[in-house]
Image 1: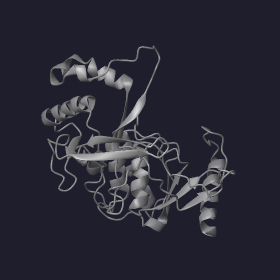
Image 2 (image 1 turned 30 degrees about the vertical axis):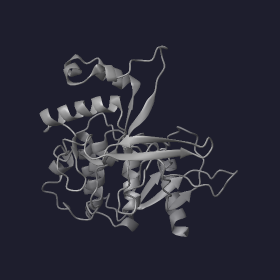
Image 3 (image 1 turned 90 degrees about the vertical axis):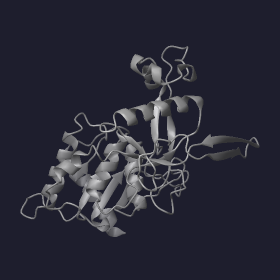
Image 4 (image 1 turned 60 degrees about the vertical axis):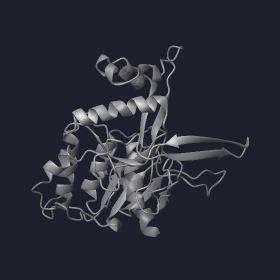
Length: 317
C-alpha cells in the first residue's frame, strides 16, 4: 500500500527516494514486502507541485504514453499577460532550473506560448440568456523532466522502463477530495486505463444514482491574491512587467481569494478537447463507508480492515 498524502512534500528529494524504495521492495520476490498487487491511496491529497505529480505518474506507470505533463490554455487578460512575461523571463534565463512551457505537439520549448495563435471560448447562460466570449491562448504544455529525481534513482534500476504492474493489479483509492496536481494524477490514470479507481464514501440518499467525480479542482494551475501581491512587490521582477496591469490587494483586511489561472485538458485523443474542471470522471466502483470528515485511521487493525474491505468489494463485482 502506497499512501500519497501530498505532492508538496517537505523534502522533494526524499519523496522519490521513498517511493522508489517502496516499489523496489514490492517487486523483490525475496522480500517480505513482495506484492503481486498494490494499492495507491490519494484520499484527501490536496495537490502540490505539478511536475511532481507528473513525474510520479511516469515512474509508477512507465507504459503511460504522451502526454504526461498537463496540457493547458489560459484567458488573455492584462494581468495574465504580465505573468506570462515573467514566466518567459524565468524560462529564458533560468532554463536549467525552471519549469518549461512547450508545444504539446512536438515538445519544443515555446517562447510564444502566450501570444501564439488565437482562440476564443463562448460561454452562454441558459438562465439569463447572456453570453461571454473570451480570448484564449493556444494550448501549451508544462515540462520539467530535466529536473527529475526519479530518473536519477532509476538510472541503473532492474525495473527501469518496464511495466511494474498491469492495470488489473493496481487499485487507486480516492475520496473525491484529491485536488489540483493530485486531480491531474488520478484523471490521467483513469483516462489512460492504467489502474482501477475505487471511490470511498456514501451515496447521496436524496439521489443515489448521482455521479461522484474522482477528484476536484482539476485546473491547469492555481494561484491566489496573496501570492500575486508578493510577486508584484518583489523588487527584482519590477523591470520585467507593467505593474499597473496587476490589481492591488483587497481593501478589507483578511479577505482572501484563490482561483484557477489555467484550464486543464484531457490526456487522450478522446478527451484532449475536454476541460477537466467540468468533466466528471467516474470511479470503476465504490466502497461505501462513512468516515468523519478529516479523520485519519491510525490504528493498524483498522487500516488493515479498511483496505481488506475494499479488496472484498472488488472481488464481489
